[in-house]
Amino acid sequence: MDSISIKDLEIYAYHGVNEEEKKLGQKFSISLKMYVDLKKAGISDDISDTINYAEVIQDIKSICISKSYNLIETLAEEVARYLLKKYRIINSVKVEVKKPWAPVGCILNYVCISIHRER
Image 1: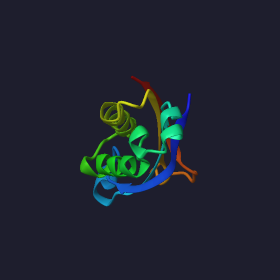
Image 2: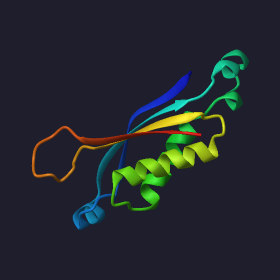
Image 3: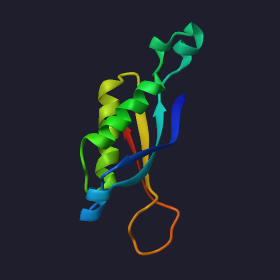
Image 4: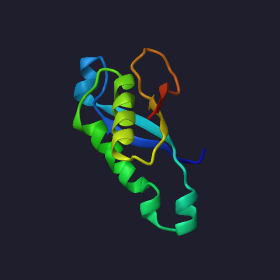
């Protein structure tokens, strides 16, 4: 299956279980892999036969900043649900949410969750 990927989109938002996370906010990194048949777009050279990834990026940003979630799992579910509903061309989507500044009391690169949802 063909795919379109967005890697490590950085968004500053207010998600987390701790009250400080909701007040101060933090950086999140979101990656997507959207599984879609790209043959028609490859032949037609017409953006209407594919997904405008600039539009998808704005959709993700809106989802991230419009509401505060306790869990990054919920954020990932919302992104996947929205994309599958809005873009009928997507057969399935993998969403990864990284939380590089997770307040866990240790030095780490990031905490990450990954989900895969199908139509």
